[in-house]
Image (cartoon, rainbow, N blue to C red; front, side, top):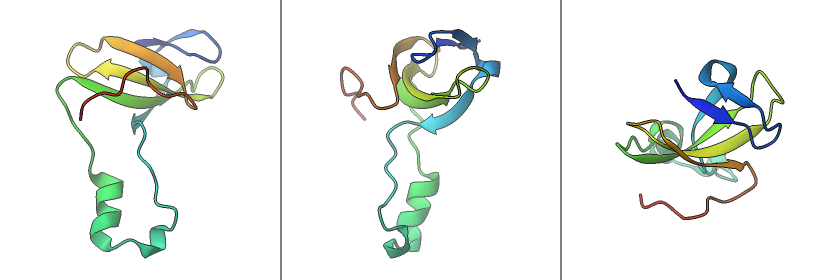
Length: 95
């Protein structure tokens, strides 16, 4: 079971009380209408699926409702960092 302490309300929540938002730091195109079908498909569907550290976004759905980011090992579920949504991770992970 994944348990995360929300950096906003400081409440510890289980994964049932949170909403998973996928990989963090995916940047949406400023003018999506200018993208080719291939570029739009890549934006919508192409994500990393590493066996190791992944930076993700989660919402404290049963609590304060704020979105935040975590770095989590996808095999062990060890959480190495939890930050507010407007913050940057302490060390940039290698892709």
